[in-house]
Length: 169
Ligand SMILES: Cc1cc2nc3c(=O)[nH]c(=O)nc-3n(C[C@H](O)[C@H](O)[C@H](O)COP(=O)(O)O)c2cc1C
Image 1 (tube, rainbow, N blue to C red):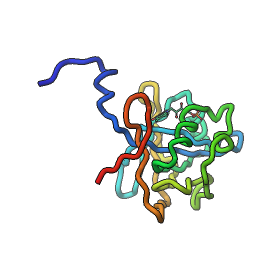
Image 2 (image 1 turned 135 degrees about the vertical axis):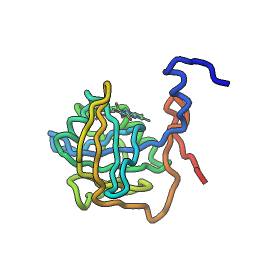
Image 3 (image 1 turned 90 degrees about the vertical axis):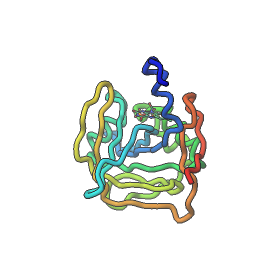
């Protein structure tokens, strides 16, 4: 049996939610990471990924300007970095200088991949779509990476944004 509920309550049922981190080079020349929950694959041939980012976020400007980005699936060991990237703005903070997070140069785009992530995807911006107060950025994957030592992915477990690993199998 279903009962009508406010949207704000019903949408909380989606947790646990996957966490991703997108990294794009901003107008100051910094590689700016942002923590995001709203991501999804949208195509197999060619492989494409979509991310929903608040219209007024520094990262929206950075991705639009760079026209390329990396999308990383962080591991459960990267909760501190994900919290930092999701609570500070690249507008006034160099986030990679604030918290420990090992990076490597991406191969096909001017961005960074996260060494300890479960996977990284280098993307070229293909299109964007404004939806309410967020913008969906769609990237074509040019190069993918997986971790040689597989770890659990990082999830938001409950609405308080408590983070942790969530084993799916
Ligand atoms: C677990 C978590 C998930 C988040 N998901 C999103 C998201 O999907 N889209 C978004 O725009 N912001 C999301 N945020 C908020 C941004 O990460 C946050 O506002 C960040 O500081 C913006 O950085 P920027 O100003 O450098 O772009 C999330 C934050 C956390 C902690």
